[in-house]
Length: 279
Image 1 (cartoon, rainbow, N blue to C red):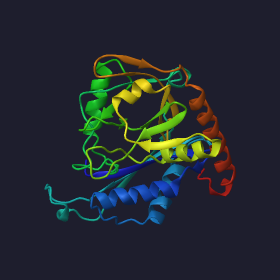
Image 2: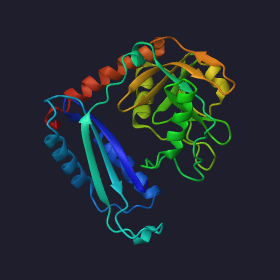
Image 3: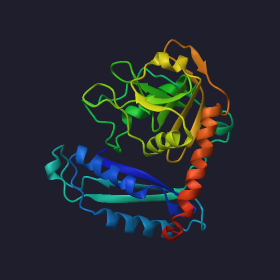
C-alpha cells in the first residue's frame, strides 16, 4: 500500500502523454513524501526495455503500469526506516472492455462508502492503497452496477473508482471540481484534462464545478474517462434512494462528438510521433 503508480498506454507503439504521467507520478511522490531514487529518464528507459521484452505484436496497444515503493526496511510505519525507492513495471495488452460498455454504456451506483477526504488522504496521490475504492466497487456490484460513483464527506460528487465522471447538462460539459482544503476531491485525470481541451476545440462549453447528486438527475448525458477507457458512455446511475437515472444508450450527441474528437486527436498524436515508437 505504501507505493505510487501510473498507467500509460500506447497507440501503435507510441506512448501516450508520457511526460504528463511522469509529472503526475512526481506530484504523487511529493504529496506522499517519497523521495524518488530514480530519474524519469531511468524510468522511461526501463519501461521501454520492459515493453520490448514483453513480446507484444508490432503496433499492438500496450498497457504499462509502473509502481514505485518507498523502499525496503524494518517492519515499521516510520518512513525514515525505508531505504531507496524500488520499482515494478508491468506490461500487458490493453484491457478489453466489454463491447456493450461502448455500444450501450456502463452502469454506476452511489455506495454508502464515501471517497477519502482530501484532508485525510489527497486523491491526487495515485497510490497503491485502493481499499477505499475497492469497498465502494464491492458495494456498487451488490447494487447491480458495474462501478461506483463516490460521494465526498460533504455530499458532493467526486469520481468513479478509477476514472473521472463527466456530465452534459443543458449542453454544457461539467465534471466535479477538486476542491483543495475541503472534504471534496478527485484525481486530476490526464484524460479528463484532454477532454476539457477537446471541448474548447470543438466549441463545447466545459467547466469543473462543485456537483451534487441532484445534478445526476438534471444531466442529459454522462460518461467516464480514463487512459484505458478513453470516453465510455454511462447508461444509468443508481442513486442512494434506489432511484435510477438513465442516459442515452451508447452515449448522446455530445458524448459521441467528443469520442470522435478524441479519436482524431489520437490519430494526429501518433502520426506526429512515429520516431518515438517503443515497438
